[in-house]
Image (cartoon, rainbow, N blue to C red; front, side, top):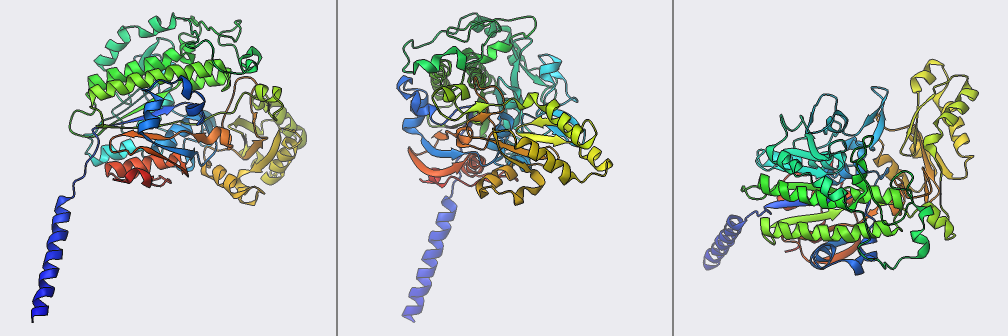
Length: 544
């Protein structure tokens, strides 16, 4: 009997302990999450420019944050719109639908821009720059899930110089997204978000900060950067202004034809982005209304300068040295606005880029460029000569050729016959190492990892018929400056650092993917993972 009572007592005690533990469960969330995407940032920039960084920007993240040193994009093409969408949805382009910056839409038989929306009206800018929305995005973002979980009390905003860098991260249910309008030099939005541009945005624009920033020449912050002389050669770069040499310093200006377009290429555009972020945080009181808020910031100028000058250039080095100072300013503002340790930051990139092919080639490294954008007539002419009909090629984009399958079918020509003929033609070019019919991808003689990357980026309604793969370090445009979009490491390896609220300091060398960001953030916030997310939770960040 004594044993029976002791057993009952122990069971009761265990039950009470379990109940107490259940009652003590408390879900805590940061007041504010800030996602930072640096457009076209290679992973190695963190360490190549490290000697020139101050203590408050990148070094603050490196010293006190947790970094994943082997982070990659698990799909191709590695392009801006697809990258931003994948980071915040955790999904592949095959399911979020943003297969590139533009694509050929099969249903409408026309080229479509990733955020274009003819049903909305611009707010604060021109028709060309303002008729934008996330209408083409098919998957929920982590911001959408946060809004749903909180009964739409949490607020989500996106901002960038590029419209796609602001709109796609913020998602379909965002409170607002803001981007730069070339014609006015203002931050603008569209009727998808607002009936009228918010008063505080109008006040920001009235300061005409663009005019004050653009009037200063872009002069190197540090004159004696440790760079090879050949890396500074103008022949590896594209001129920033027509008729001007591609050498430091650079001066840009407003023109009646292009408006403020060249402002996008300056480090000042990143400074302007931070100024607007501070204005938004203050006026919307993000992180101060009892619910977790999300701010998605993308720095676009890094991509414009990268394309123009190439990763080896002194301009790109100076761009990141100045961005480091802008980040330090942003973090200092967040410390004051939200409180140190009360906000969560992650920093990554939407893609990276190779060194300029001309620079690599000069240094005896296999590289080059081939202008496929100028080959559409040549390809169409080849198809016409072989099949007797013009117009069999309808588009080329992102290493993919789009064929007029309706016309091919109407001629009662087997599609495979046309595809194989085009593949044989393309493989005569020494720069092309593979040409693959996407519907027969499973039959391609390729390593599985590359098949998986191509498949992950393939959405039948918006993807092409023939996929080409160039030699490594070959681009599908000019050999000067740089391009991106391939499945190789130089385009797909990016930084990933987490910092702030409950983030331990440390690093790991295990392989991670940018599609892991949204599931990880969802778990941190105890909200549901975006429905199409393919990534996994980064468990290292969940340690107490």
